[in-house]
Image (cartoon, rainbow, N blue to C red; front, top):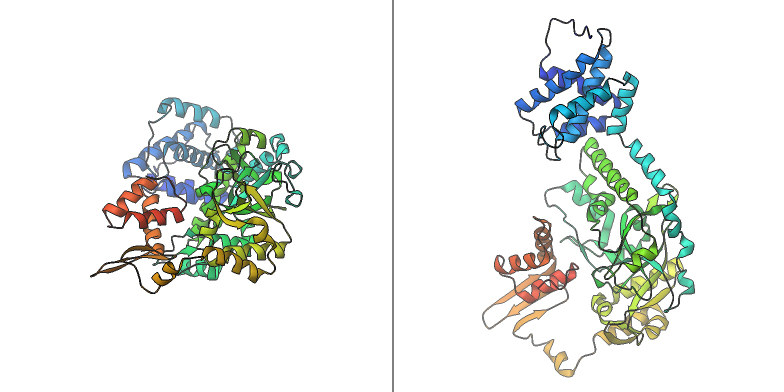
Amino acid sequence: MSLWPFSTKTPTPQEVEKAAFVIIESITRVGAFKVKQRMRSFQYADHQELVSLMQKADGLAWSFQWSWTEAARAWIMVKLIMEWTDSAGSWYPDQGVPRTTKMRTLLAQLGCMSEIAVRADLHNELSGEPILRRIHIARSNSQRTAWHASNFTDPRQHSIVKFRYIIHAMRPLLMLDVPTNNDELKKYYTSRYGSFLSKEGGLSIAELYLAHPEFLQVEALSCSIIDPDHTTTYTNSAFGLILSVPSGNICSASSTDMTSANAQNTARGCSLIGQAPLLSLMHVDTFLRAICGAYEYQLPSPQEVLQGSSGHNEVLVLGTFESDIITVSGIFIKVTVEMELVKEFVEADDYGRISQAIFTCSAKLKVPIVAIVEKKAKGCGIAFKEWVEAEGKTKKIEFIEKKKEKETQKEMNDRYSPPMGLTIGMHSATWRDNDVIREYNYAEIARRAQTLLNQNGNNAEQTHRALHDDDGLPHQVIEHVLKMLGHRNYL
């Protein structure tokens, strides 16, 4: 029987919790911060209840085992906090396994542990080191053998009838939520993305990656596998990068969309800027746990991913893990069966800037530009061979611009006599009638649309209706902006 405790003074709940936090902080400050964040919404009664449960460890100790008792209390605190609270800090002690059964199990486990074992288990529960060890183990498992680079095509040996690539499809514009009230974060965005970022928050993401492919190496990327029978890409993107990916950098793969946005945003590091050091470490810890979870899912083979795909598939890829780094091995462009550039590419190529970025990237990295046939796509009258082989970068840009801006004389005259009604331009739309001129800035509308899309899981159709009904925006303008953001078939 325990002889503990001999003290005549009963500690307050605050003193018991404080002593437990001293133990936890001595093991991992990030872990202590994580536990405190979980407790931020606790009521006074919740603290009392938690301390009462923590003190059940006292009955397992002898009088000389004070340090063991403190560690054991901290151990019970961590176990209960991590299992009986949600991310918002709500305390649910009666959910799941009944309280008495849960506590009986914990105490039975605790009674067999030395102080060293208790502290080691606290470290494993709260620190990132065990997560990294688990990722290392998962990266070397036999499932990844099928993802070795030798099982994919070298773009220098491209054939339109036989290939298999891991690709990162791109779209011209990405809207970033650049806050107006956070100077440090605004400064970070500006210094990181420079001229590729507009003051409205529009990031020319395709031009950025083509000019600075090293950006890919510091992110978690949403990629796809394509072959001649499976060419559907994210948002039907008509161009993108072909990647050489070490098999250990494949986190997870699915025949359908996995919605990896959270992991990608955390990998970009934007959420870490302006945060206190411990909060930044919390974000890193959350990211590592998400990546570890992805790695530990059953990984299908590339063939299984392709065979199960009816639309675009998704492969989550780490840009860098230790010495394993992805590289760009080629650039792909969608073409029709007649080998014409698809209409979507020319529409996305704002004044030939994407073409220029593609040619520059290809020359700089010495990688080929290859044609991927999209069987049902519509062409634009521009032959892929002519586009690629036109002499000189300037002539290539002039070539595609002449094709894009081929107009009738009437259309040329209309440039100098603005039409009445709604005109959809490159960066904005204009409504004109005899009395009113209204300007609709796409970047501003895109920021508003992105906010709506992020709220309460709104889909594109709900966002469209809100922009029309609440903001009074024309349907055609909303449709154009949502298409820029990668949303189609929403009505």
